[in-house]
Image (cartoon, rainbow, N blue to C red; front, side, top):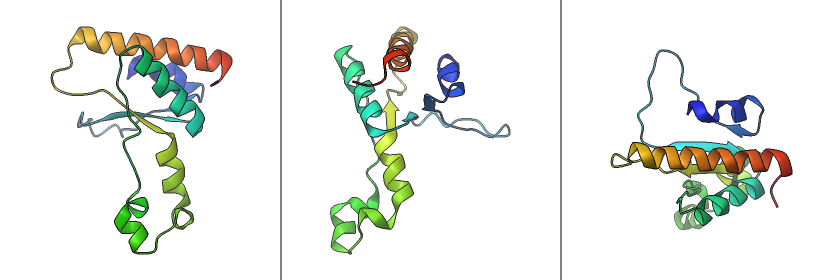
Length: 120
């Protein structure tokens, strides 16, 4: 988390916000990008380095049941926007310190590239 703070401070990515009186549940870790193109670009770059990430959240109103109930993307524009920009990073109990370091270093390099050149 701390390795990404500079990117959050510059506005390149959004990171989870935890109020001072609570701690993380370590269920997931995510970044929110400026747009879907950047999120997908970072996801592709991570995959090329053997790091699996996913967009994770598909809004319920966009699910088959939500569509059957008559919901449309325009009904919840904030939800649609956030879900299109969110990238979930690997986080699980068996993740070793070496794997965490590999993910952190590679994500940092990819974000520096994004910061310098923008998404392709």
